[in-house]
Image (cartoon, rainbow, N blue to C red; front, side):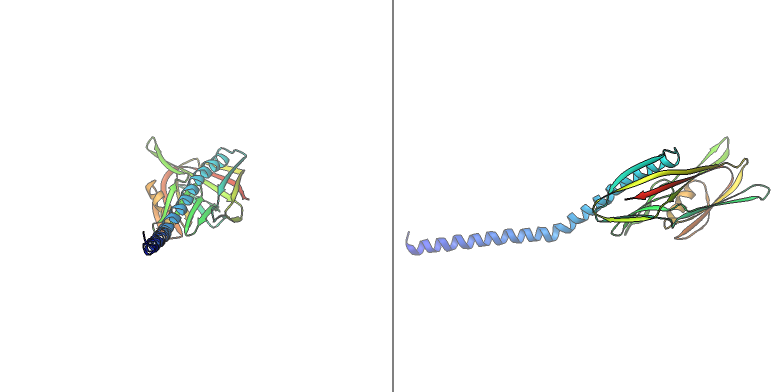
Length: 248
């Protein structure tokens, strides 16, 4: 092979290496540009799904503290660049009426525990779990403790109220602890059938309205922030439970 042929071969090998290197870099860049947003979306979705499972555990622990009066329960939750907060912006007003016209009114600040990740929100409120996931909107993830049934052809209505006491917010990427402590409980059982109305003030009012209607309540009025519903001539049980909640 002549010197000229050797030089041509060396140039060809160099050009080939440069072309291969350029193709590899271009391919990696395309994968990063096109694939990273999809990967990031899956990661964020996984974070919210994990938080949802944690809130199912939270609901179970809260049930034991509130209804079974277990003194204290503690659980941990990973934040992953999210925020966990306790607020008292939701409430419930219960009115029940005897046949003689006597009226009893009970008002409770139920409060909520919220997990917020970007525009997605997961909320524990009055014993139920609710979620907002744009653009699909808000849904009920797990039922609250408001139940209806019939016994010997008579209406039965049970309203469980869980009042969350506490104000705190934390955020970041670490692990936070939620501590639930039983404070007090009351049981109210009218001795005859009553007409009962409930007014729930909540950002999930539309989902509350759907749940109440499915359980035999007649909707009186409904908006994006409040719902009022009525059930006539029912045996009524109201359980009110105060739980002190702290996060750290």
